[in-house]
Image (cartoon, rainbow, N blue to C red; front, side, top):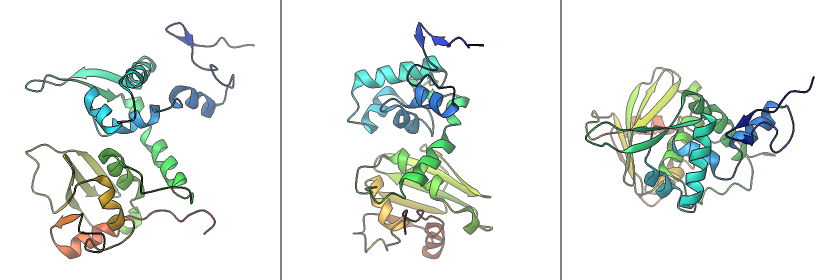
Length: 232
């Protein structure tokens, strides 16, 4: 029996590129267009305005972002909603199915950074940094450690909760409770030499400020490690 290809608003979806029944092929048809996964990444920690997504991805044109968001809405990966007053702003957020892509992004990240071609000196968005910390956390090192951690990345603020075997992270409001530790830096890239390069803040140019017990901060930083490069 030959199965009829599914269509979305007049266009072929499954089989539009590869004519292949493999789930991985279909996944590429759904999210494999340029910029799509990065738009999804920027929504992974919560809904955002169009202008905020665009500001995080400055090389992405407004036209392309509009097209990608519309396609993701049609596919059921993203939905559009309005924030309640006083914000009353329109935001885009991932559906439950869309949020299920985080483990996919994590595995892609772990796999890709093993390449010697990976360049950590390229720009990094605050959301990408937060997802990187969730990805590169070693659960085996946590033990009984439980913490509230604040991350100030440029003008973006996040609250992290370390408990059990995971680090949950969400955008932080002004009413955020007093954290056990606070890490502050002008950019996401300023975190990398300390968290992954294991340099002291002063060795990395004092770009990352740490508030809280130094021993506790070091214990937290030691929870994160990049996988070894391939061939090493």
